[in-house]
Length: 130
Image (tube, rainbow, N blue to C red; front, side):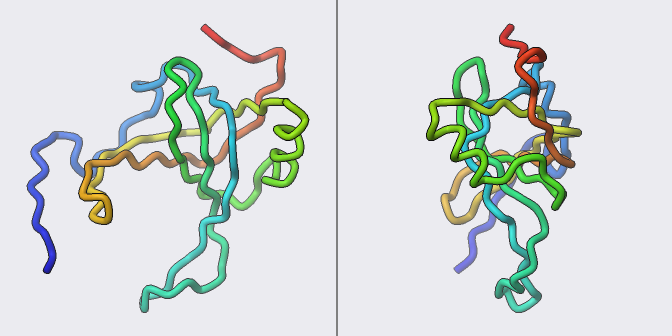
């Protein structure tokens, strides 16, 4: 049985710039996972269509996932994990990031969808820690 939700918000189906929530779009990158395409039958096609980035924001250390729609990324998950295993951190900046609320039916909760065109690794000299 499917549930019906009524979303009473002006933000419904509206992507807003992420910098409204986070004035500085620099985040600690924890993990990079492939995002795969699903066919009309709901089964994975095996085609990679982007990446999911697990990040931490630098003010309250909230963890979130952002999806990027590019296949050209500046660092792989293996490279990232090697840096992290050596005690390092990788800061990134999301490009053209947006956020939109949606209902996650699996968790029965209002959740954020964060998407970006891509990301870049922030050189140490450009780190902005407020």
